[in-house]
Every structure is written in C-alpha cells, then in structure tokens.
Length: 322
Image (cartoon, rainbow, N blue to C red; front, side, top):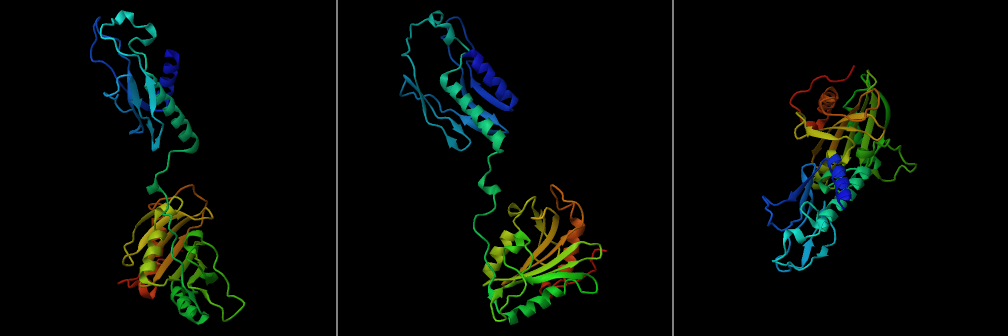
C-alpha cells in the first residue's frame, strides 16, 4: 500500500497537482492512530478532486463523493470496524498506523491519475464558453438577377479597376463568410433566383488578395445575428476581434482562413445588409496570428470599407497596399 501511495504521489507531483491532506495538529503516545484523508486535489489552480466529510450519522461507514472536473464518480462506501474507545494505540496493526492513506483518499488519487492521463492524451477539457455557438448563422435571401446588379455596383466601389486587378466575382451565401468559398458564377437559367450575397476579388499592386462582400438578410435582426456570429473569434481558427475605428459600429477580425493564410476582415451592418472587406496578405502560412501582426492590413480594410456608400465615414484616406 505504501509503495502504491508513493508512486501515486510521484505521478501527481510530476503533473503539477497539489494534494491537500487532513492531518492531526499534534499527537501523543495516547493518541489513537488517525489515517490521513485526501480532502481535495488542486490542478492548474482549480479543484478537480474533492471528498465530502465523513457522515456523523453513520459511524460505521465512510461516504465520500469523488468529483473529477464535471464527472461525478459513484459514491465510495468503505466499511469500517466499530470504534472501541478503550483500544490503545499500540494495539492498532502497523498497516493502519499514522500516515497510512484511507481507501477513499487512495481512490481519489487513483481517479486523479486517470483524469490526468485522459486530458494528457485529449488535451484540456473544453468548456462551453470556448466553443463556437451551436446555432447556425442566418441565411441570405434569394434574389432575382435584376436585384443583384445594385449589389455588385456597391462592392465594385471598394477597389477601382485602375488600381486593382479583378480576377473573380459572383454570388455567395452566408457560409462564405466562414469558408471563404469561391463566388459562384451565374446559373444557366437567366430567370433563376440566386443567393442574396455578392463578392468581388482583386489582386492589389503588392499581390495581396482583396475582397468585398455584401450579404442581404430578411430583416435587420437577422443581419445582426449573422454579424455577431461572423465576428465571434470562437468561430475562427486563431481568431481575434476588436472594434474598428471606422466605419461606425464596425468590427475588425484577424484569423487563419481555411486555406491556411492570415486574413484581416472588417464587418459592419446597415439595416438588413452586412458588409465585409478582407485582405489576405501575400506570404507564408502562419500557425497563428494576432491583431497586432495584421494591424497594417486592418488599416487597409477599414479605409477601403469607407468607400462603400453605406459606410458613412466622415473622411476617406488612401489605403490601397502597394
């Protein structure tokens, strides 16, 4: 038993776990042998293993609940011999002498080691707040080809043809804001309804990939729900978000896009429409990215988005990357 306890203590110490034991403050030769009970174990600053105090109403049983993270292990019941008040300390078998660990404390440490092994393999246990919201983003409305023409005219103002080289354009869905899927070409039928989103892509003079989108939703409320999800950094690899200086009520986003490149975005909503301008700088594929690293690109998309009619920026400055 002592060897096993020592081995568990070594493993717990190597994993950075603090095990708190309830020990007697002092002892004399007439003090009955008292076993040390692991009352709680702390890992990375949080309590991951706890044992409830012994029930006073059941002197012959020790009921301990072991809690590992959010997983509750079945109650451990250990039958204990009836306490004899006249029993002397020297009559206690050596295996139950002071310093021996109660079975519940041992069970706590065993469960703790299992917990540590699991998270070492699968990573730390994620919490609900660290995950992207499960509710899907609203979808864009369907529009006729005639209704798409004004949308194209709006996003085309972001980068004039004389400055950037247009290489792709077409309709997009709401999912394109996350997948960066290529815009779709016109359907074979000229009268068929099309997704109410439009995107244009250009090569900037410095070879950065510039894009502008407009997404049309059924209502301003739906547009706001889409915007909140689109700028949520939890829904983006290496995502970071902050408020933009301009346009008004715009959001900046830095993230790693599905192709593995760093991307700087600005999003803002006006009524039932949401606008996005993005800049994918030319270069290697980073493992992570921060807002500070993409600040020049964020300045670029903020300035270019002010060229949109509905941006309502008070001033517009040149910001085309060269």
